[in-house]
Length: 237
Ligand code: ADE
Image (cartoon, rainbow, N blue to C red; front, side, top):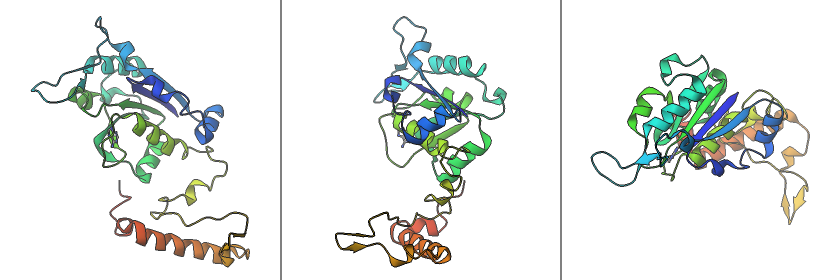
């Protein structure tokens, strides 16, 4: 998969993709990640990337011209109907569709080239949304100062699902949300720490019993913390 990030703060991404699973996936050529400065695509003499909103109001709005130019450089067109198969252009914004595990999985399934546009919280000129954007994604019901942290979250959630990105094929299958539930608790050595003992069932090597215990604990935790997941309020696309 190839990922291109468009941002007015390229330094924000210095090193953030150079750790752990994402770093390994980059080194193994499972993913290529490029970060582009939107400002370099501005053609006016002040390299302006934002301007005041028509109709008045607070804050600044990202201008369309540099974003269209960046998309045309990357994709050869700014018309989303003409993108190559497997190309998606995602605008990160609080108005987007909520990011859930099946949404991340759908990018892995359908997409080989992902272009992420990091908006400012005041917004992006709507003509960007109307023409170049294929998906608008929000990482949660709160407002960030910009789409940059959201882009990092989205990339991480996708890259770990790419084939061979994790050490073992089964690791992502057992993640929280992969079956619509939160994950069960985990323990490691020592078997007893400050008087707190690891549940006996995890020590006895009976895999059927361990699996049953994990399912019960996952259900218990989900019921306590995220009842909405059990009520089918989550997980649908
Ligand atoms: N930009 C600002 N807030 C955001 C959010 N919650 N999700 C994605 N992008 C954002």
